Length: 159
Image (cartoon, rainbow, N blue to C red):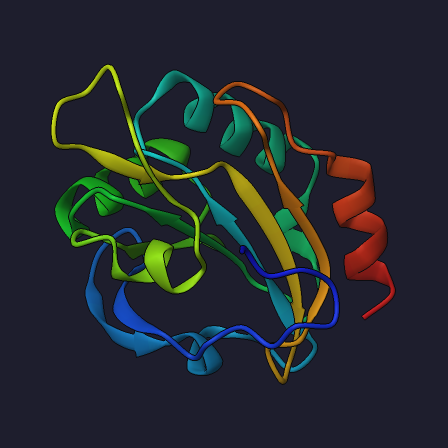
């Protein structure tokens, strides 16, 4: 079962991309002093991911104080960095979940019936405090639902 409010997320480690470079980084090291927002999407350049992340830019999520916004998708680090350059928002970073281990640790990995031998995380968002405790969790039950942006912003404000 995916994490819910009150759970502590496993301190996974994966390549963290910043638009130019990538290095193996633990979730705890990527979180800010107040915590972080973890957004899981299937693939960085999917239409839904492009739509979501542009909305985050317009909503000013880069201005969360000491609360970084961290993406997770199945793309490799070069694709992640290209997506971040396309997004043109240097405050955002992405974990490259190439082998699905991050998504699996969050119990989000789902087989895609129309994509042979491909699995992706359910689209989801988690607001974590600095100790990785989930303060807010959203997991979509379909592949196209928008994120509840205002609820996420309220959870970040409450950190």
